[in-house]
Length: 354
Image (cartoon, rainbow, N blue to C red; front, top):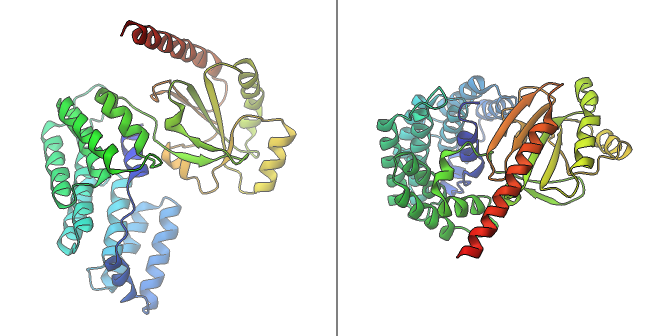
């Protein structure tokens, strides 16, 4: 999954740009039915992951608005990055930057350019080096973003990641610490920035994307709060025949590993909420359950089909990704749990030694 942890953690933590100028640009065009239709088409197509068509729809809306609609340009920019069209994303970021009227807008434009360059710098093959020239350009872009808004937490975090890849660990640590200082403890970015500030090398790992969801029982599930525990994420649905074949194995895992440092999150793609709830209750699925009604979490993990499983180690690193049936998920989890226990024991010994 090229760019999985990187692209999705960046997408997940991207701070919402709230700016009255963006709203004003849209108000100037709202009375035009063709503009409204193009915007609506773009939203629907983006939800359906028809990114090329969604970009075309927003581009048409921007044309109708005179070519300088920041709302359209921002959506085009985000979709281009999501679609892996990094060269055009850099161009669109430049177009947005030319229209930017506030420090927040200028910072967003420069940080988006840096994000696209950072993603483009990632190698196609695992183990190959990042493109150092592109990393340097990304660093320059993030520095420009921070010059416009020194407390832009997203730019601070992302530049920290770039600096780690450039071999500048202490400079990266300073960025992550500044990010922590710029946000509140409840922010989705907070825990990960804290971890990276403590150990910048973690930014080199394929961490699972950060996310927080509300489970069926009303509890809050925050992946970054699972540190020290192994996590199994199970994508399924009641209408999925292979998923039904796999359910006894998941139930066995939940029972056999009770009391162990393991957390299971089952993510359903059921459209009907009552059908899902009834099935969960009938089959005594007592571990955390979440219904991914809009498939946002599925897109975050780039799930291509179900059942799909993601095992995540106690450091938050994706250990395996499996799609289909017949995998020995239990043995994989058993190894990760042993590692988690050993890591905890070593940490305790280190603390005693201090």
